[in-house]
Amino acid sequence: MRIAVVDGQGGGIGKHITEKLRRELPEGTDILALGTNALATSQMLRAGANEGASGESAIVYNAPRVDLIVGPANILIPYSMLGELTPQMALALTTSPARKILIPFNRSGIEFIGLRGEPLPHLIDELVRRVKEIFG
Image (cartoon, rainbow, N blue to C red; front, side):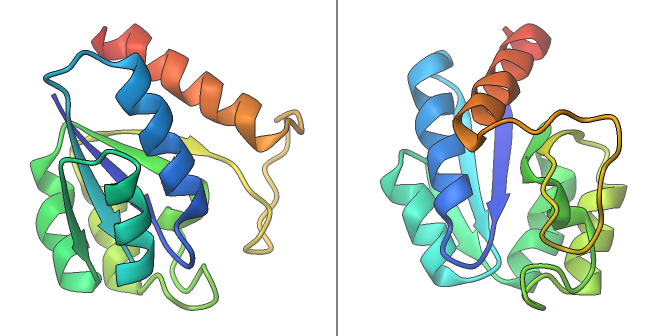
C-alpha cells in the first residue's frame, strides 16, 4: 500500500498524520510525503515518510500513482493554504483514482456542516483508524 500524505505551509498537520500512520500501520507501508513546499515535505520526512517531493509538479505526478491520499480537506480547494495550493494540484488530487481520507478545516472560508468540532489529535486518530479499517 502506498499512502500520500499531502500538506503545505509549515507541514504540521502532515507531520502529525505521518507520525501516527508510521506508528500504527505495518512496517512495509510506503508513506510518500507530498508538500506544497519544501518545509512541509521535510517535516513529513522527519516524521517517518519513506520518500518526499515538493511542489506542483511532484503532486500532479504522484497523485494518480498512490493508493490513498490523506491530509487536510483544503488540499482539494484551489488557492487554499494562503494560495500555496494551485488549481493544478487541487485538480490532480481530486481526480486521482486514489481513495481520499481528509480532515475538515474551516481555514479556506468553506465550512462543512454536519461535522462535529473535534481537536486535531482526535481527528488524526480517527483518520488513522479509518485507514486501518480500509487497508488493515
